[in-house]
Amino acid sequence: MTADRLTELLEDASAEVAPPSFAATAWATARRVRRRRQVLASVAAFAAVAAVTVPLRDRGGDDIVPAPPAQSAPASPVPAGVDVMPAKPVQRALPGLPTNFAIPAGAPRLSQRSVEQAVAVVQEHAGESADQSMRPLHVIDAAGRWTRVDVGDLVRTHDEGGNQADPLRSTALSPDGRRIAVPQPEALVVIDLPAAKAHRIPLPGLNEQVMWWGDDTVFVGQGSSGVTRVDWATGAVSAEPAAMSAWIGGGSPVAAADIAELITVGEDRRVRVWRPGDATPAREVPVDLGMLRPEGYGVSEWYGAAMPDGAGRVAAAAWGDRVLPGGPGNYGGVQMLTVVDTTTGRVDRLLDLGTNRSKSCCEVLGWIDDQTLLAHTDLEGLITWNTRTGETTRVTTGPVAATVSVRPR
Image 1 (tube, one colour):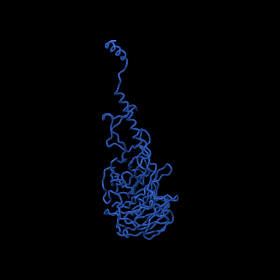
Image 2 (cartoon, one colour):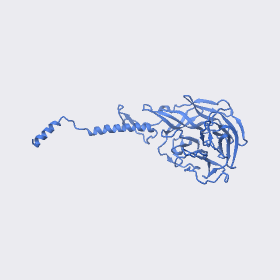
Image 3 (cartoon, helix red, strand yellow):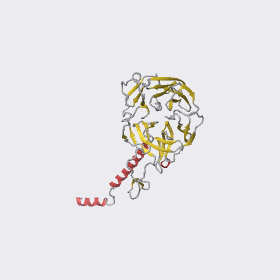
Image 4 (cartoon, helix red, strand yellow):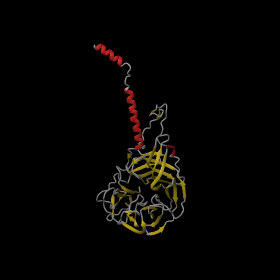
């Protein structure tokens, strides 16, 4: 058989075979990869929101692709009043606080050098180390100097089950920065920094929580509702009629002010306001999640102290979820910071911290001014959040593995 005849036979045999579509195959593969990445990204964390929003349209449910600007207006990923923690927040030092909270070795002792006024108290976490002994407290003064607290003979607290905890609380430093209230088993210890002296006040019970009401009164609790009132200067102890909790209450820098709590009662989220001395709440209103519902945010539970701004609002950390309107799935375990009006119950602002964090990751430390919060987070360290503009900045250069109580000046 000649070469020409062989060629003719091969051409006849292949005439009915369709040519391969490499482009179509590549496009289908790319779409499968993109779908898979979209699913993984939505499960991992929805908080990584792009800095520039790209308008989207639906191609019959088959795929999501960018739409031409003339066909679709850009859609905001979150409603007004909701902010998202940036992946890399701007670094900005806060006057009076160090950017590195690593406790220096060999810091002077309080018994050798008194402190007139502290801006922060720090206690290093024991973490998962085998050594679970009591870590010392350190204070930072307005000049940025560290001092080790060596008075008071402090021990770790514990509950009825024997579970131990470090005694420093985020609400431990007095509003004027001159004293530290430390709960102890069967006692309250108040450390007078200018006098470099510890006042040990006998107080029955496994005391675990504290909060200040002005500069003279400390409310001490044991993890649930009900507190004892202590006048640290005189040592006077009295039962407090108000059934508030020192675990979720943030106290008040003004002794005449009410104390608000954010509580969960079954399926209800409520604001409860106490007037110390009164056995019944001054008011209790449902939390208004109306601002958050359009974008599917819900608050499951608040944790930590609700810190007052002095103008009728409190801020507290919370966790919840987000069901995207018309979108896939439910993003559970969203960590957040919230600002709530104590009169109306309205959630005025929310900072979405995302889902890639540890349980009870974050804590509100206090208000720097009438619009800016200072908070402690597990990944960033200390951050500020402007509740008017939504701007979030990082105060420390890295995470802070310690309990911190701060009174910014």
